[in-house]
Length: 580
Length: 44
Image (cartoon, rainbow over all chains, first blue to last red; front, side, top):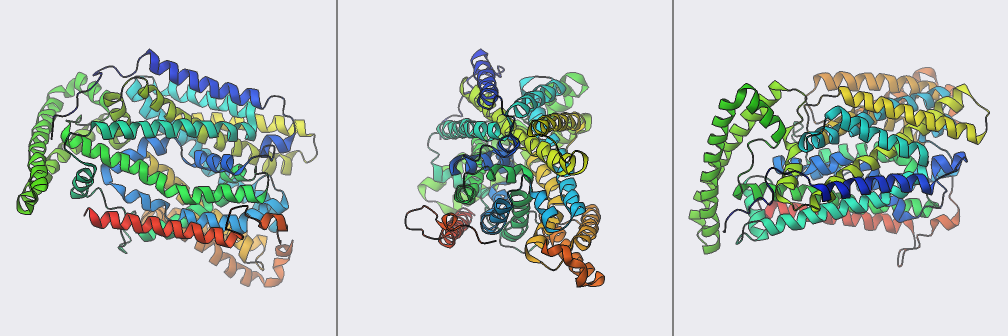
């Protein structure tokens, strides 16, 4: 089996080379965004891009907007903690993207809308347009805060930076370059940012494989992970309490993806920038094909980190800064006792895994099963210690993020060589910037087009609206930074983002599906139905312990059903606006 | 509501209509679910 790999640089998180890579890349991206889009005062070019964007840029831009820093920081931790099951969350995406490409996209392009909510105004009436835009601004405004907060809390902790300074600095950087660059800059820079991200993740994967113990083959690693229930990628059970199953992922995930990719302006804006319908459709199909393998690969990385730490003693908790702080502030004896108990359990587990591997290679199933059972028991003891320690740290500081969010960054800092550390930290910041810029760009556009131009200033020059959009983008950036400064999360970060989306997305999707498919329903019925459906989702979320993915289905179904009932009550004659 | 004819061309070799492209995507999705199910069963 060989010895556990040595830590290349204990106690030294990042060096000058890492900082040069991080700061150099971030500033180069921001400068490129500003330079490439300088002097644009045409509203269409600023909000929708120059309409010369090819399918690959659109595909990567859609992917980069969706895959934030949380995806790359937190998802490996999810794989480490719970295995591959989270991949089912994305099963609905391919079907949803096909529906969007076939139905939503041709209508958006035909009407030449700037925002998805403009379409609601065409189809229904101004108040329904405002409702759709309002739901988006509320949900995405909070979401943008989360995408600033989430990477900031993890990166500030491990790098030893101040949390508030990290939030403000990263927030202001993205505000500056999004305000200056507009839609074109967002799409262009996202293409390079996602390149940095993929390079970083691939490098981490290769290094991880190289650092697995000698004698442990890739198949052995998967078998070991399977023995600890980390390889359950697909679960066909119908148990409604389970958060991720084939059914929640395919049905609930399809509604979530349909709403997110089809009606969330941060995504709609990305694919409306295509040269033609063909380019936009191919960009979406690119994501329909590569979304599941990408998420699988990131989760597998987490699973392999789990395997790695079965042979290498991990920290009791991965949030080392919180551990060190508590150890130095009165909890030292208790934490040292937990550490010793954890090391003892890990040592026993490692010994049993050695016996398991030997029995497996010599073809002795009875010895293999016995060693596996003993290793599982030891691992269970270690997990109890970890949980106790994490609970103690969280009780001392509620702003401590879920410990699984620190797994990947801790592994990177402890086991990757300098230079590669810089590349990975750069990748996280690139991911943070790419998704934040897409969100802020969309928030600014929606406020300008659906609120300001629609209600406040109906006739003005393009330069005026571009300036207004820049101000609104900056304002939303400041709101997001403010929200991030006061955020506090108990959930694993990647799940928190999906939960927030699921609470709002179902109803918004319901609005659009009524618009597309229930032609006899008018604005008044759908408006009140959407409000009632949103109230129902809030009430159910507060009281019903079901997978959050179901709220996408419930919100959408309730909005459509209530609309039909209300329209019948009003009388089908009241649906004249439907034919607009 | 009908898109212009040029938009109906996929520009992809062997795939003349968008319906064919969508079926390919669904087939890839089914293949992924099949592979992941096999992986789950191979390493219980």
